[in-house]
Length: 158
Length: 158
Image (cartoon, rainbow over all chains, first blue to last red; front, side):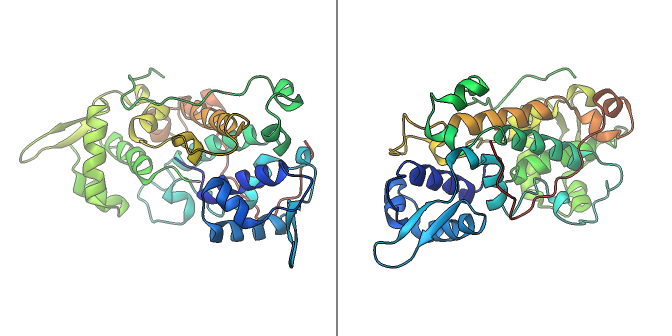
């Protein structure tokens, strides 16, 4: 399971720009910093501008800066503004004529899990990404450690 | 954001087999029922067999059946047994030489969100998928409705 590359890049782009509040940043320097595609970043910059997280200055010496304070840029909202495809299973996307329709809880259970995922992101802002040891972290308690997944878990009783 | 096709198919395959406890099911009938790839289902069947959720009977008249009671097949455990790639952002996957390393909370926040996602799935079993109105649903309360995401959310204060 993955966030799309677009959301990943969007958060990293905002982090980079947020770490240089004193000047305009360019797409090419962000692309170089993370070694990622400039054309993807152009699309993301446009999208983040539309959503009100970034403002861009055109022309020579131009670039982008945050359009809001880091503490006002909510991570859940950023992901929602970027992800065009939140359908986690095929049957959420369209009427597939599935034989189980009407007798299937899969879509609602997966939607509930996704809701939990997004509610967690909703608790954080760009300020938390920029300043790990600052008020965000202490306010919310320790952040989770990266998960380790095992390929063959034991059966869990319900 | 998506579950991989493999996890999606795995859950639907288990649902189908669980709905026919009186007989062996074949890969081709599951492929037909959902209009999905038979070769993908072969891989998944193998994987679910290794993980202990399915048992297969070879030869003419062969097929597969559940290897455990539906209430003992936990959905979180099924997804963990299928998903080979739980890295939600590039920097979780490897040392990318990212300039922000050591000053970045992105990976731990995303991991926490994923943990919330999986904890929700851990509350359900195949029995909940098979019998929407049965004890699973009432025990856990109403399941969430599919989410609607808007492309341009308003800025949320932290």
